[in-house]
Image (cartoon, rainbow, N blue to C red; front, side):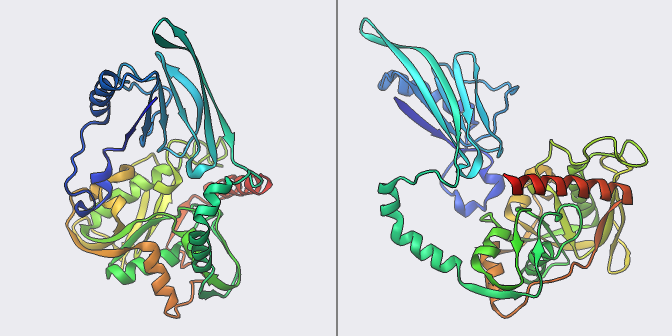
Length: 380
């Protein structure tokens, strides 16, 4: 068996050049075809597996190279039990090892060669009672203990209980906790961030490194870029595509959260005030966008705080691609949060309500949706 690893060509869009200096990124399937052909000729394996960091959907028209028996892919935070394209089996386990894939091949010996006569896959959910591999656990034990000790270190205090469950529907103090740090370190006029983990809960009392890490789960760096009012408005319009338009005055004709946009691509802004009007079509939803009390003009220069992922234009935010980076952090945003709140800054306990969804009927329908999903998640 030959296993070939392929990574996404989006890395130059996500990371600063110093992270990939010396590397070049060819189109992923062109590179795959060249490597598969070479491996087949040199090694002559019975099975060729591609382990691919890329999103592949069932109806994608991807040019799978000849001679590939299995593609295990992962990128879109979804899962696929297994399906075939031609003679190639494709499977995607859930992200963060929430499931693993079990793949079976049946091979027959025919003369001097082996031939695959059947291939199948299934996903196995990882549960709380799933057994840990003892040898791996022993190997990692000292590092695990150090990590646990660090994660349990108190950083700051929360004056009240807080939840992220509604954090993509209304302004919340947990999102403001991220914005506050980004504005402070980037010395920015405006900050943009998503709520990456709506399941986070912070109880009144000590707040640990673990809880701050659960609030900001990605290893992003913080950038300050040169922008303007038009750039910000365009970004917020892209963000608003997370929602569907109301089709009735009561906004009750169906789910208002779009299934085609990931929640981690719904960015909220701090430093301005605005409304997202779901009575309007996509691209025309941002209303009353104001900065320092006045209507924000398209040509108003702004220093904008965003993460490196957004600065590369990912998630549909192409307006940021190529913007001048005037400052970037040497540490991850998560570490900046730990530093900031470790200096005796308390977590915000009340959101300032600088943005909201309109009309009120849409807000109520959306709150019903997220409350129902939160209840289902609790039951699971």
